[in-house]
Amino acid sequence: MVLVKAKAKKRSGHADDDPDSPTRRQPTKDDVERIIDSVLTDLYSESGKERLSAVDCVVDILGEKEFPFERIFKEKQLMSALTRLLGDNSCSDELAYNITKVFAALSQIDENHDRLAENRIGALAISVLEFQVKRHNSRGGVAFSDEQECLITLCLDILNNLGDSPLVLPEQDDEEGSAVAARAETAATLSAEGCQVIPFLASVIDNTDVREIQVDVVCTLFNLSFHDPCLEMISRTDIWESLTVLVRDRCNQAVSLMYRLSSTEANREYMTEIGLAALVGELVNDFAPSGFMDVSLAGLLVNMSLNPLFCEDLIALNAVEGLLGIIDSTYKVDHVDSKSNIQYLVRVLRHLAAWTRMVQLKIKLLLSDDQHSGNITDVVQDASMYIYVTSDKMISLYCDHNFWSLHVETVIREVLSAHNDECLLYEWLGLIGNLTQDDLPAGCSIRTRDEEGAEASVDLQLEVVVWLGELCRSSDECSHWIAASGLVDTMHMLLRHNSQCVEKEDELLLQILVSYESFLAFEATRLPVLGGGESVIRSIANCLSAEDEELRLAAGRLLLVIEDLDRDERGVSGDIGKAVRDARFKALVGEVQSNQ
Image (cartoon, rainbow, N blue to C red):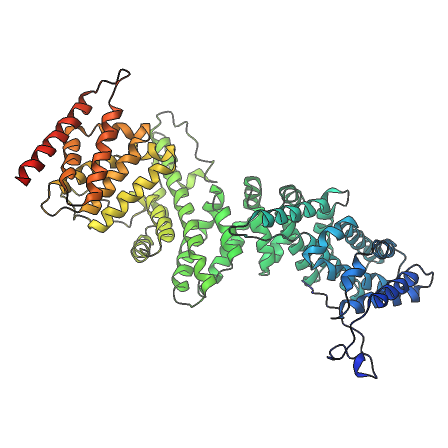
């Protein structure tokens, strides 16, 4: 955006006239009042020359370091005079340009936005834009004049500043949140007060070939898009064709606006219909050798890959190889911003794998249905590309496409190298989880190992146990998942094995008991813990004689909780409660005998 920096007029003569001179005099209160009176007198004059001189004086003040220009902008009469002149279409282009410079400079300071909103500066900037475009169209010109370009650029600068909204505010406090909310309200006001700014801005893009103006308009729309009503209004305009052209010309601002628009399912469907996949696929292949991709394009890919038909188009354009190429190249360049995009790109691959898995599921259901009444066209455009139909049977053609067979080895290699990045590893594992037997290279298969695999390290076991306990405490939904996964039974086996070893892993045993306490707090995981039977109770009781005091206390506390949970309404213990008392008694006897 254009930054308006007004400069003081150059003066000749004394050193005090030099704005950078250390001996320059600080203006007094009388000086300020005298200048304000003079400016107001000239602004209300009938002479266009005096009006222009008054506005020039205000512009000069913006460049004065010593002058308290904030005092001028608190003068309501002055602001009223400036807005009245700018709203008069009969004023000269030079006068309108200078007044717009004043408001553009003010709009760069957040503290001035409320004052500008009170004077409807946003609506005024839009009216100036409308008038300039209408005048241009009436003259039948091909391009805007230089004066019009400057004036339009400043008006767009005002709108962009008023509609500006931060993308990310990590750990924002209440005051920051209120500031963002107020900024969003300002953006909404620009489109809600009968000004119809968004349709007009969309038409500006179509009516000009000046790239700078187009980019300014796109930036303004991008900022407005963070307000939901504005986003919906932008989606309904005829901006799509112009945006597509700008994206094809590698305009990053247009890609950013596309990313915002792709946040709704309706827009994703429309963007797929207009063939955005071909353009995005071309951009992906262009970025592959360099290893650098703009974050807006990565975000656009993440959003659009939620649409199944877009996934089909993107995979057909060999986007899987392109994305893997970008990821591989990124590791070879020293660019922090680029490396931060890797997780987004893997998320796109994960979405693509989810689509291929869905296609396989649809095909399987269709082939298993004797009536062949299933439907696959909701996830693919042409069913004949995936199913071969004869007079008496249907055959799957999925394996012929080889969507992943050439890339499985690369994916596995990336998984093994991502062990130091948990978030990235999560995305890679999610990708692998969506692959099936039909995605493997020819001759390979997923073999179930009958023999017992190598035992994981104690440190890894400890991490998993701690994670399960924290996961269960996070929500009731997680407790249902843990109960259904069978992991509680695995923890029972781990507890029995370690409690019977000569060299016990006290830390692992302690974390198992702590996780059990978390499991007992939820109904879904309570039954698997209590269902472990007497063997689990004995294993817990064995910890009562451990050398580690914290482990002994945790075991005693857990046994009390289990015993209480097994009581009926009258307080009578059940079989599990009796087993707890027996195990506690045997542990006590064993401790006494060992001391003797």
